[in-house]
Image 1 (cartoon, helix red, strand yellow):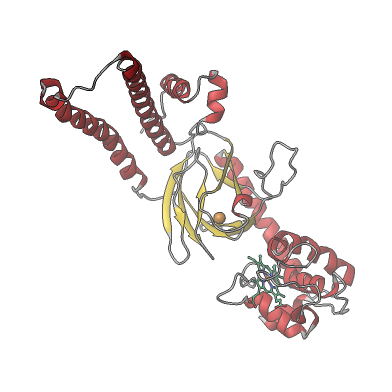
Image 2 (cartoon, rainbow, N blue to C red):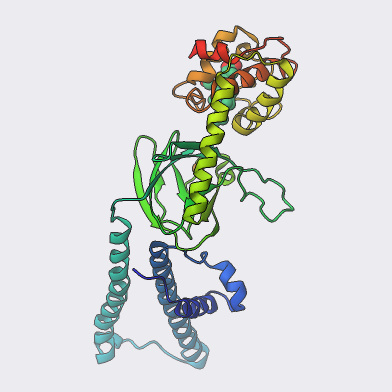
Length: 374
Ligand code: HEC
Ligand SMILES: [Cu+2]
């Protein structure tokens, strides 16, 4: 496994680019797949270039042939179709040789294709295992060996900015030069974690684990998106991978652990939180985790997602409200949040939902209440 020869890569890109659209080389690089940064994606990229090149050549040959034929043998020139073409030597051999050539071209792609597929499906010991869970509409990352878990969601919907629909709050951080195993699954419907520069693409299927792998050879920030239609906000669950050196990765892991420990300590302390504190925290968690369905103003989407503004659950007994947020509602899009949010986060969320948007119940839920309800 070697990195692609860059000169060859540029050369082939240029040919394919010319074929696809007569344009400058720099514009072509933006139109093509991003430059691969791992041996596996380099192979996939080469395969893409091979098929594009072959297809481009075939397209040019066929168009030229059809064009010349239409022009030279046109009816207005008095040309009459050859009724005995099939019996001519050219006619007979043409029927045999053309399929043979086509088959040859097919096999010239099938060879490298099979080799690459084989490589994609080769699983060896990995240095790091990342479980990626797709949900409507966010990605959850679990670093199984480091005991790190976080959620990553879109945080740029500003149409005028460069990162529009591409940036996330928490990028995935991965070390370079280490073999990374990805375990893909989903919590609701099919998704697909696709970062073309970094790793091969495979569906995330609820109840199944799909495996892929990569070794990233170049530090940098790489972008991707969900590549399997998963609902109304399918286009709003981008992926950002930050590839860093092994030392930086170790540092990041340490920071994450520290942060988590601090959060856990804060959440489990027997502190009584004030209404203002709970509301402020609750609002930000609500906007990050719940507003995609229930909407920022708590109005929901009639017929799809219930309104929380004035809802019987959000204004009725606290126990029922705690129950649906902690355990979800099986068979609906309402997930069980108990495993994803800590006691303080759930307490803040519920306090927020019970007092925002004119719900005004005056109820204040504390982390201890959530702990008791779990
Ligand atoms: C993927 C969409 C989705 C997300 C995200 C979501 N919910 Fe829901 N939620 C639903 C659906 C659908 C229902 C209705 C379930 C049913 O059929 O009873 C629901 C019901 C509820 C109810 C009961 C409302 C009522 O009046 O019946 C509450 C409370 C609630 N969700 C809170 C939350 C909170 C808090 C969050 C964020 C942590 C959240 N939801 C995130 C889809 C979602
Ligand atoms: Cu998706």
